[in-house]
Image (cartoon, rainbow, N blue to C red; front, side, top):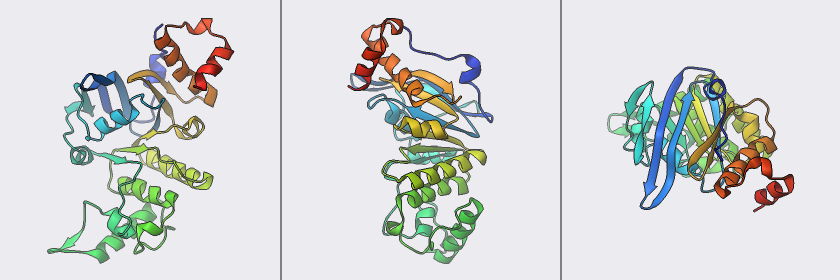
Amino acid sequence: MSAPTTNDEQEHAARGPLWLEARSITKQFGAVIALSDVDVSFSLGEVVGLIGDNGSGKSTFVKILSGVYQASSGSLLVEGKPVRFHSAADARAMGVETVHQDLGLVDSMSIARNFFLGAERRKGPFLDLKRMERETSAMLREIGLGNLRAIGQDVSRLSGGERQAISIGRAVAFQRKMLILDEPTSALSIQETEKVFEFMRAARDRGLAVLAVMHNLTQVRDVADRFVVFYHGRKIADIVNTGQSEQDLAHYIIEGKLAEMGIEREQVDMGVIRAITTE
């Protein structure tokens, strides 16, 4: 059985111009194939939700886009030109900002110091803390985060949602083109989750391409403009958000399982599908 696909107009629908393309990306670790011939494109001004079971290749794909891993074969193109990210610094210099689950924030440092982490302002050989605090305040106000706590406070005093806001705001303020969020709402309250969604939409509306790796299908449905589904290292669906239910999205993953088992979808009753989902 062939993997589920979508028509071209759905697959390439986007709010803005195409910015990054991953073509035929394959990644092997010894005899293990983590990704196989994956094609995904990202356009400016859209939120793409990347979903799939554990072990589907989502994390490996994100690490390739963010320069942590290099593909075994395949290519990355930015604005139609081939690029190679040899490190996270390379990806960031090209405009890709990745917010990992640990957020990459230093608890013992202030909001301003974290905001400029890796891009510190200096006055001669010394850090220019006043300038960093002043510019942090201005940039946070510009992107709608002016009500955050005093920027001189340590990040350890922030809530999970506020920490996500700092990471997202940093990407927007430094004019990155693409923002990758790895499980941005894990361990957040409902209120904080919705606030993070607001920040993601704001980044999209400012013209960034946003990729959110999420396991919660209800949440990803609420924030994504498009869904990309991985199953065992392959892309099995790429669909525009037209109001699909959580069950609709789950069926793409289920069909990937059925294809692997050699079972025709039409031959399976709902009882079997329920059994597969609860494994």
